[in-house]
Image 1: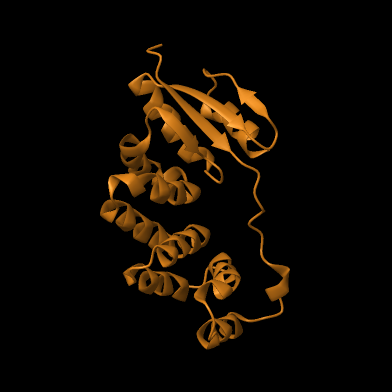
Image 2: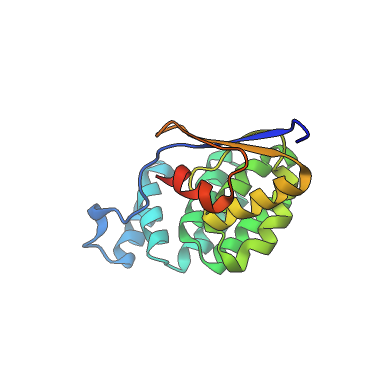
Length: 188
C-alpha cells in the first residue's frame, strides 16, 4: 500500500419512508400548500420531499427554479429533493449541477448523486468519483451499494486504502474489504 487512506463515514439518519402526516393528501393538495405558503420556503421542505418520494414529475421543474436562485440554501434544498426523487430526469439535473459546481462543492453534489446510483448509472458516477475521491474523509451516508462499488474500484486503481466506520454502530471495517462486504456494515 502507498500509505494513502480514505476514511468513509456513515452516520445514522432518519429513514426515507413516506411521511404519514401526508398520506391522506393528494399531490395536488400538497402542491397547493407549497404554492400558498407565505412563510419561508423551508417550511415546505417536508411537503416537497413527500412529493419527490411519490415521484411527482413537477418536483424536478420546481427544483430547477430553485437552482436558478443565487441562494445556497435553495441549492441544497433542490439537491436534497432531486436525490429523493431519484428519477432519470432528477439524476440528469444532479449531473448538470455537478458539472457547474466548483471543485470545493464537488463532494456536496456527488454525495447527492451517490444516493441515486444504480447499475445503469454506475458508469457516469465512476467519472465523477475520480474528481472528488481522494485522501481524507468522505461521508457516505445514504450512498447506494453501486456508488460504494464505484468508489472502491477507483480507490483500488489509485492505490488508496479505504478505512470505513459506521459512527452509529461503531463498526470498523477492514481496509481490504470489498464494497459488497462494506455495504451491510455501513447501512446497518
